[in-house]
Image (tube, rainbow, N blue to C red; front, side, top):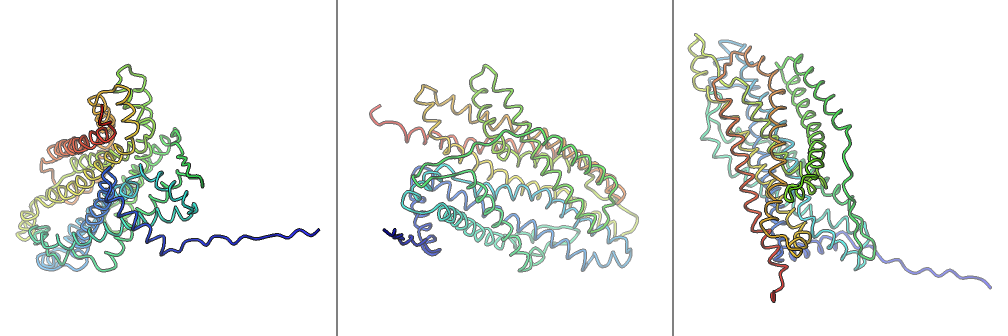
Length: 484
């Protein structure tokens, strides 16, 4: 007998258009849900909008200072004609703007990443259902990325519109003894595309990375990999990067574009290594507090210890603000007046420029931090809905669940502020020497600025937690039986 092999026709893979159509239908269904999914979806879009709008605004300000340096006009051209060394003062504004960008890039990318990862609670179940109806693992991954792309494109479009809409408002500001013209804040087309593309790519990479932790079988069984414990190599790595950075910035002469870019890159590297170290330290502290007899502190510490990386991402924005505040607090922020009439007029007109720049930088940071804390906490409440309901069914009062929510955010917040302030002082010390050499003096606003950072940051955190309390109550109410 001869065996005959029978080949069954393989099921055709769904086309890209059909996946997009299905993703749009599921998006509409999520927005219509009353279990918090719609809130998270809209929050993700708003987060992308805020991130892209602020990134475009910060890049636009940097572009303005670059134009004023390379093509001086008005009083700048007059002063440079009288004293060519005055170009150093004009260029310093651009260098400070680059440093501000370096300080804010982690917060902006963190918000975009958080927006992409928002709503992970329902993702496992949605992906499991899609697997059960016959989609392959690759199709499910593509649909999740399409979903993130829809959110990102919608948010970036809104953020770009907000950027254009706020351009006229910058005409009320005076910098470098000249009124800011809205046209100066307008990036070239390639700059707008570059910023929007960077925001989009950051969100897509974060979404793809998050999907790596989820594995769903064809039978719809989802398996989420636990976060492994962080190792002590993070401490050694941070120490090495910090030592190299301190030596480099002490020997680096920040008097040109290339040295400034190197300095900004150094600060980015330090912040990146700092985040690695801080997450490990948070895990270590949580492990110690988990042994405390206090039930609230013990449960909050165990939550932090279970995923210290996610907890640190939630408060790292405020740690970065503390870093910026401490960095600016020790910097001289006013020019010395000179005997030259034109220079004296410029010094008088621009004496509050650095204070304005600090307020704008911190304002951007506050907006990023407030949005990041809110969406992270809201997502955490919904992701832990089953655990919260289980605790409530076991007899845990709502006040206990609320205290745990506050403890697991406020305690890491203290660590973030302390570490950020200390690192900001270390990074700011080398700049003091250069600023003094350029004829700047301390205006006495450093300590109030630092105090304002801490007060505003804590206020934002408290407001974000307070806004999430009704959401947690709603989660508990939605799982209560009507006949109880």
